[in-house]
Length: 586
Image (cartoon, rainbow, N blue to C red; front, side, top):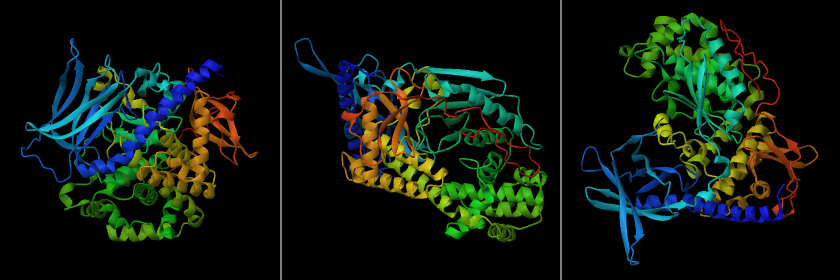
């Protein structure tokens, strides 16, 4: 697969990447120390800055710092030392100003400088940065700009493009998994629009749904705003099924086509889960929600209905809300549910629970307390609840581990602080890395592959392997938080996976997935350099020990296909008075 000279060049590049990855890990360990100083400077794209990037900055102040002026205008100075003709050093600078405002779902205070620094034509190096308020320098730090030839090679040839048909307009990037699988994406979105169009009393429009597909994982894989931002990637630590996630977000988009004074958030998310046939994947809602009772993790309905819905544990809240909508539709019918959903009046109460209670009385003839008792009795009567307890427990644990990884090592992907760029502006300035690049150090990729493999094991009912991988992820994260520059060594499973990643990378294969066979062999799937995003597989080692990258023969043994091999298969998840929901099973 590579010549001797090519292997030497590849080794040099691999070592330079290791240095970039080390810088990323030191940045992770340094966040706690930076918090002591108070101020933080977050740069985008994530995963390091390279010559040619169009860079954005987030300046996050200490929690106890409050500006004297109401708008809190913060200035950011980027200073560049330059050589004069006689060798004397001078300096020039770039300077921008932005207000301090809440940003993201978590409402974190930050001054955001979006796509301010176009580094095309700049020299690599470290550049001093100053945070200034009312003429006073509050904090000094620096940003490092790496050489362009160290940019991840899977960004080569990537550019914004779009595909449009009557049901959807899909904005995506060339040479990414979405571009490769566009025919399957169209199949899924067409089926979703067709099925939802048959729902009586639900908002409809002839407009195509605007979808942005990106290979960068943000949050749990989907955000609904003016566009539907959906992660579509091969190395997906969420284990989600695109047809289910896409249907969930399309329901939200159609929902917003109808003006309403008030919607109960619990019903908003519950409806999306119900119509999608599951949260992240097709799943029986009632038995899995019933398992929460056996696990002692069930949130009482009156508690879930009150306050801010999104403050509750994500997977538990969404599962219960979906099962509740399924119960309401099954007991009172779709028409009655639609009347309740659209008919809630904010004047009926002082908070979400009071408003819902009044709506339930008005439209269904039951109060919230009685409904909560009836719903819990319905769940306790589910005959298969015990069979789902381990699966549900590990599902919650797995996504909590994913969010811990994102908070600690990839905060631009964490849903509460996700970097969700303005699409039009991003296209105007020619920025693509924001939607493509995430941290790609050995530690980051090892953690993501462990999470991804845990998802596969969970789906197969291999609970021991799921637990083992989660233990490896937490050990890696603990070590990284302590400042360990090789945190994968903290757990033998993480060390094995890191060895396989190193072996694949030395063969110019960027790993996207692992497959362990019954004969004990391990195969790494990934993108070959120059051939991305097509997938190939390479045999790396036996499952029993670590792989030595020097011992690996760089030979591709299997040619990969699509994310969903074979023709899409219908998935029938009928609900009362609903048409079958058709999608694709990976």
